[in-house]
Image (cartoon, rainbow, N blue to C red; front, side, top):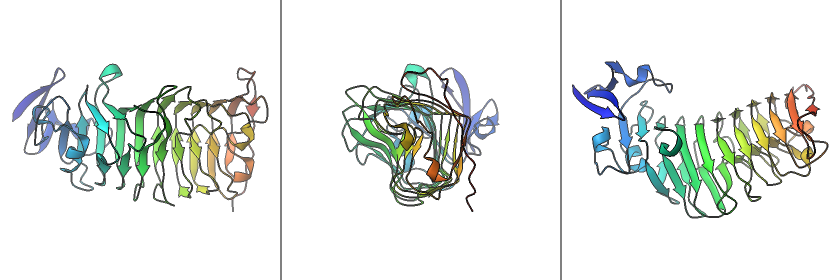
Length: 316
């Protein structure tokens, strides 16, 4: 057994992987069973990435060491910083979990300093958790691009840092039809006064079983808070517990989700919203056929007294 210290906690590792107090890391890791474990730290000039002392310097270097659908985990160390370009991070190995360690100023920071900077996702069943994505220039087109095969990817506790000068046009682009089925966004955080910042996610194609839980989105654009989907049909959509505040002056198009499709299904419930429209706000267009209820919406001059009562539609 070899021992090391990670931010004051004693870890051991052997041929079976990383241990903590004699237990496998997977025993207390919420993402489930673990295969191989790799570490990323921009402050360490390592090579094999199998321990904090030999951590690789970039996330993509760790991805290249992973095996698809093996339950591999990449721990990104507190204080890690990394510049993202159009091709520097390819999430192209399925089933890998990327876990940022640290909180506050020590949360790992990925900076997008060109308008085409992005994380390219081309593999399914991955998890990204506890990162700060920072806009380093105005109008970054998208922070995360689902290019192919990104089904069942989860984004948990991702913080987007944008200002009135540096912003993301949108945070996630979901790509072609059904390649983002089953994806989940939970506890993402975005707050900016930039009117060019659009919805958390955007798509022009149909996707099934998209999930948005407990996200916090504040922007000044005349756009939805969570998802802009054009005319796409969204089957099994589930939107719960979110707060959004947008610059919309016409809330009839959808404050949480915009779609002009008329054959969607799912539930939009227990969300809170604020817009620049004094009247007629809805969480999602009524014609979408999505069930919507218990959504609280405040218009331009209101402080939360308006309740949008949903209607249950038969989607058969």
